Length: 111
Length: 114
Image 1 (tube, rainbow over the protein chains, first blue to last red):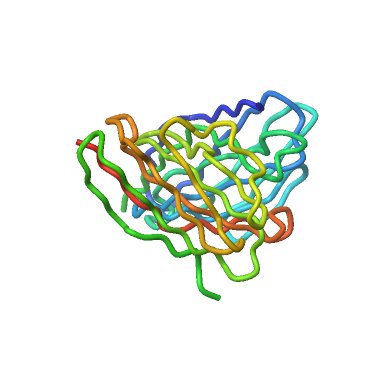
Image 2: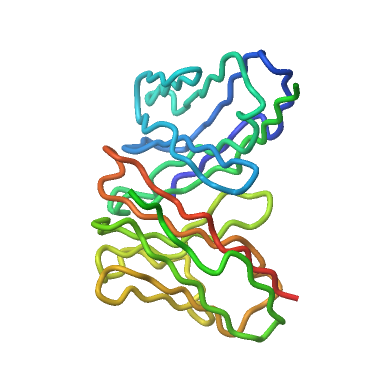
């Protein structure tokens, strides 16, 4: 299956700061998703972004499919942004959309 | 719309005991997934159903894990017998068309095997 590597593994920010999270993947993908897992364990879909750029409020994501990486940008971070951010890609062409997840970036935003 | 419901929320069992988890996906979502999330790692797919048929169970430890989705709606995941390394959060997710609508995850069941 396609391998997913995320960096950095941990990140501590002060409220208001900006950050960039990176996801590298080992093969071409049809489906790349970013998720946020809050401190209570709930996983929330942020973006479906196999290529190009999308924005949703203070969050935006860019995937450069030809170079096999994706970036998640968080601007003006808030304490509620804390949690773990996962990048996930489809397991294979006939996988029926099931995902392989990276190990995540653990983000702590301090007041 | 209601989310993906999972129960129980927490479970503590002794090794070699059996345990079962239940998932009720969002109404109309044909695809249902069970993931295992060990502390500090990303979720790992255990099994995927399309309606009541299995699409992918290649990572399910079939000697001890089983899952079913009768009538293509609710699903149960069972572990028998449990091992210490099965301690994890078991997440259920459902989707209609994930490239359009994404995935909806339940809150998970946290299993501790002692």
